[in-house]
Amino acid sequence: MSELISVITAVYNAQATLLETAESVMAQYYTNWELILIDDCSTDGSKKIMQELERSDSRIRCLYNEKNMGVAETRNHGIREARGRYIAFLDSDDMWDVEKLSRQMEFMKEVGTAFSYTSIRIIDEKGEPTGKERHVPPKVDYKTLLMGDPMPCLTIMIDTKRIPREKIYMPDMHHEDYAAFLNCLRDGEVARGLDEVLASYRVSKGSVSGNKLRTATWQWRILRDQEKLSVFSAFYYLCTYAFLAVKKRL
Image 1 (spheres, rainbow, N blue to C red):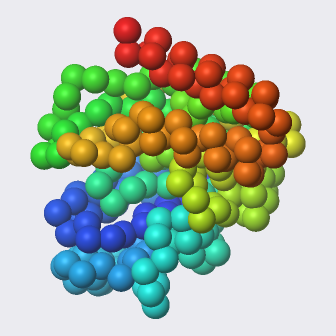
Image 2 (tube, one colour):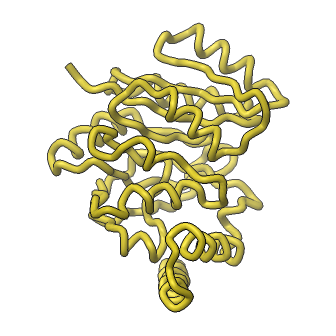
């Protein structure tokens, strides 16, 4: 029997995209999944859409935060409630190709990894392809990850039998997913990349991820506060991050 995959989707005011996101999970060739939708006190029609989705498919479960907690704790809520051996993440405005879970599960078993990720295409606010893709390296270890995160969060899948759930929980800080993935790889686990475009990442105008200076500041805080690197080491990895970011745009 195939292993259960728990898909964690944090929801906040996502009525414009949530249905399309959920349908991309419901269309998966790999059928042994549960989609956990966690509402972070939305003020639009997201809750109604969630309830309709839950009624339409028994594999969909809806959770509701009692107060607005932010994306990190909302994802953690989902991780705590997950029933699957494997945990995957999908934001409420992104989408998966229909073969995403099946290909990734095959890949993880083929190479024997507990942590995997795939390449993505970039779509605009309307869901139209921009023609841009982000291709991933074949592997990422802890030291590589200190230089920046090349692993798209919407493609991450983790085997919790080998990587304990407590390592996956995301801290309450900016770049919470990056901080959690550093924690997952710190003790020697190596993440493996499947260089196939299997997901669509939506980029909106004014996206915080597009502010490189702000992103670098967040990275510095993770290197110093969470990873406890010396000023010299943190500066080295931050400079490497900046160099690679510029190189990627040339």
